[in-house]
Length: 316
View 1 (cartoon, rainbow, N blue to C red):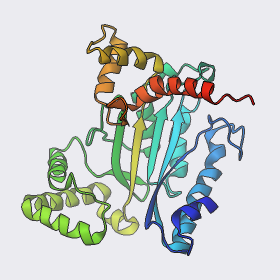
View 2: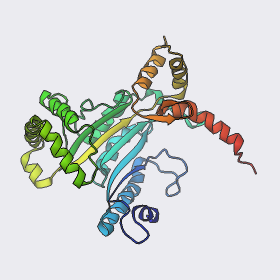
View 3: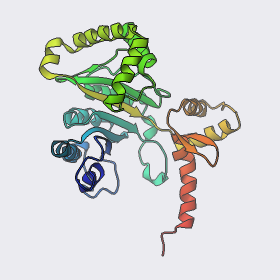
View 4: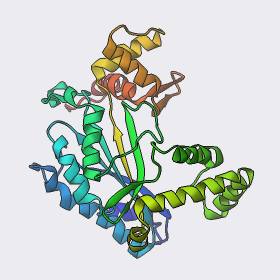
């Protein structure tokens, strides 16, 4: 908490930031934690999840600094069945996003003792939907390949999660397209003095977006229930899955891509398709390359770590 205060506030006690975006990673599989070394299940970590959110709640109450909190969790066959309970137990703690990452074979092979390859994107997403208690329409807005990334945007209205947009409703899809066309390139976190005139100017150029927005608001109210909305309000809550790829697949896929070749092996070809669609790249200016995250973690990081081990040996 002391670190959080030093980050959020200036030495004189004034706000350094009006709003903080923070992600906390919690799961029973983590190695090296000090607070609770050997949790028996995800439920053992709920008090720590609550304490994390409480720090930010106190920060806002005492200083006015607001926050957006994301909950990250690695998923394996050992804790997949606990995902629904984690969501149900923690959704009212203060998190605005729940993000789940199926484990990939990356790093020290001695770490991987379970049959991780049995976990599909569909398996994990089904567990997330069970926790949300609703269908999660991830095809509304797609980042990269859906075998890698799925996101569903909506709000809690009382005990119910309600999607902002339903991918089965053509009217909602028209609203999505109008949203992209109207404010897609706009920084929605800009100061109000900049954001308001920008938004008004964008709407003036596309007045039809106003009518589409009003129609959407009426549909959302019907989906959520007008009485429930008045009574409980709507608290935005996003669900996300990021599924990384095994290093053993990424290395040959990337090497072939560097030569402009497509693999005949279905698994490696799928890896190449996912790498080409990657929405999460890292810059390597010395190589003049933008590198997909799975290439960074599965191919480049291990080599860099070997060089560091030689440069900075632990002994002595």
